[in-house]
Image (cartoon, rainbow, N blue to C red; front, side, top):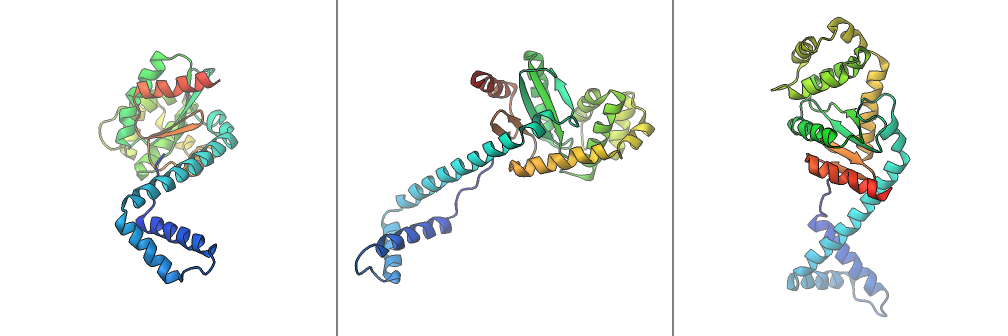
Length: 247
């Protein structure tokens, strides 16, 4: 996940509030202005206070966000792993499900393609669920719609790998060119691209990504963890083995 460190202002406010609350419990507490002066003097004399405060706040933030993610994953596990409107590769009856959010114009997703292929070849028990998440360009949206529509002709996987292997940006014209190359009926594909289930898949991808605080592609979900960014086949395998060992 992507987390942001608390700002200096946030830390300073926290320190001042702590000082104010502490003095409020004392008989004849110091004036607020003096409390602030003392807090600032303490920070200037002991700059390590800032590092310690940042560390404590970050730990609390990480723990809170991880707890939120686990709750969301628990509540929406079925949508993530068992959506009948999502493409499934690998072993459909595999013992661990790996979910990938991706965009056909994402260079890191293209690099992840070979890592995912290597994983599937090495581990016959992985069930891979794809969430088409076209966020980078209109060409990405067209390609995602076309790929999902290719399921009606039984060519999703072949078309998916071909789109991912294309050198350069994916636009409407390149998508159609690749569709022809893999033997799709392009006219039928264009009709199927307008089906409501295509829009529903993309809408749900957007919704799930937002709920899980996924900010970019690729992103992988396995077990109770979200892994943003490019992962190697070894890292993916480790994440999957961690889930198996916990079962």
